[in-house]
Image (cartoon, rainbow, N blue to C red; front, side):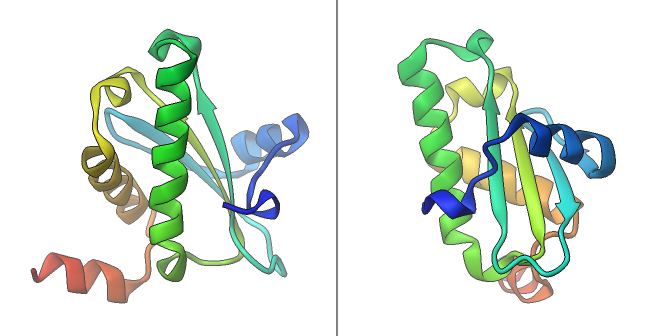
Length: 122
């Protein structure tokens, strides 16, 4: 995932927490903040040390980035997404993380209708 697709600055995280909408399930909390005029969506990741050692945390972050890469076509470009991983995420494989994130993104109505219909009918 390209660097310009990431939220890095603390100020941007805080803005998303204050002004954005949050949606959650047991594994993830997703904050979405609309940024009109933005060319592509950006994601910010927060994985606490409580979830495991550096290897585990980095693996979770890689999985999340890969999910967003796969869902790139379905997501609106005008949003910043902040993803906070919760404890159960540390014991999940890629496919479980993907289905969990898709679930939260559906709750937030971030995924396009086309995606939710095609995957729902399979």
